[in-house]
Amino acid sequence: MQKVEIRLSLAENVKTFVNIVNKYGFDMDLRAGRHVVDAKSILGIFSLDLSKPITLEIDDDKASDAQTVAQLMEDIKPFLA
Image 1 (tube, one colour):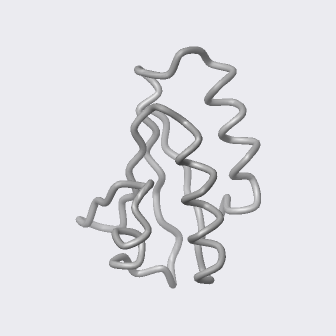
Image 2 (cartoon, helix red, strand yellow):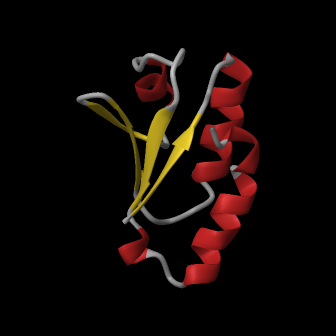
Image 3 (cartoon, rainbow, N blue to C red):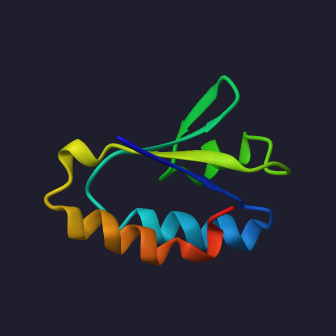
């Protein structure tokens, strides 16, 4: 499992982020304190405190190869905290 800090401060950022992560077949969660939501859920993301960076947890054990995770990291680069 990989973890990275991201920032989603605008509603448009959330929409773009969800569109990106939905392209990938493996599971991803967002963690803010004790709250955990599916990273592919717009409503779930909006239930978090977006004023602070949140942790993206990538379940890369189910990823088909390391290049797929590397491509995800490149795609979400604008959101990295």
